[in-house]
Amino acid sequence: MPQKVYNNIEDYRILWDGQVVEDVTSVTLPSIARTSTSIDASGMVAAVDVPSMYHVDAMDASVAHNNGMNCEKLRTPGKHTVELRLARQRYSVAQAEIGFDSVKYRMVVLHKGGEEGSVERNNPLGATENFSVIRYEKEIAGQVVELVDAMSGQIEVNGMDYASPVQSLLN
Image (cartoon, rainbow, N blue to C red; front, side, top):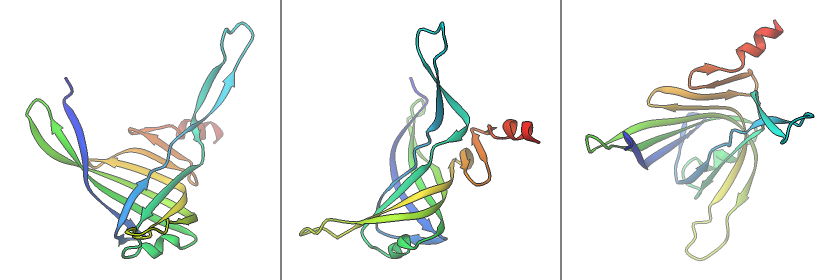
């Protein structure tokens, strides 16, 4: 039986360059996909995709909103800092207790473009903004569990540094 079950995101807040953005309907977080090389040598009965521990594909994120307070700032070209704070419900199975964990996503993004929403009756005329992510960090209960920084060359997962061994060979 599991020790903890995570139920719901009870609430969230997004900060854009340090300012709260209201009426955000959803945030699509980036996919972290490692680049891979296919190896198919003689004597092998199948090709094997070997993922890189050191390099990931380009990361994208998006924010859908209903044009609430500070949503216009999401369209600003250039580099921006984003922090998404979540209150995630946690159910401890053995104790039958409900609690909450803090989950934070911090990103440095570049605005790529936006999509206006559909014009319909009873629709708030929202929009979706799309971004290229150059730095991504995920923190759960105060612990950074994933960090990818394209510009500084950092890749860390659960406290393990995957970039330093490669960089040390180059020094």
